[in-house]
Image 1: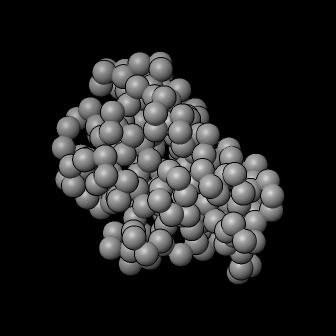
Image 2: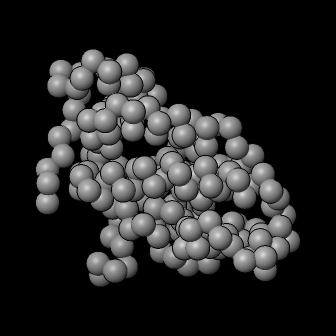
Image 3: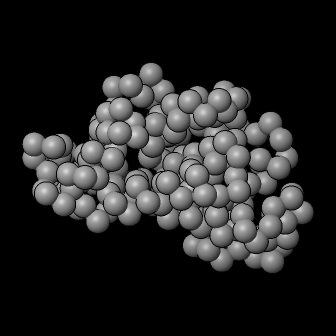
Length: 187
């Protein structure tokens, strides 16, 4: 497999430097994903923007954001993002039962969260073509058109990170290694 370089302030292009600084300011360190993405500054900038919009601009609460992120990470079998979002969920005070259910692909604690996971998977697997019945089930769970569109935003963000980690085989950051995860298909 091609070895993708992990860049930092000393090796990145001039265009990537402010983006690296932004990542370090946000996380107190340069996440490995961002170090890889710095090889294409437009990708890193796009990812930062989408992450900020999904994290701070959607109607989803912390539990729901975690459901969308981790559902996609697990479905894409992202060895880097599942541990990272487990740590992020802890920082957001999401109950470990939610994180564990997402990581283990077991039932979530509430029907509404389960409906969100199901709909996120439907959107991913159908490539954005849910059936009328699948849409109605999502609406019946208490979600609306805004949340349909916000799931699309979450998908766009996670495709960027999951695919980057797949091709770069990004090592899990040391701070997140305690949340290491192995996909079922690898077991």
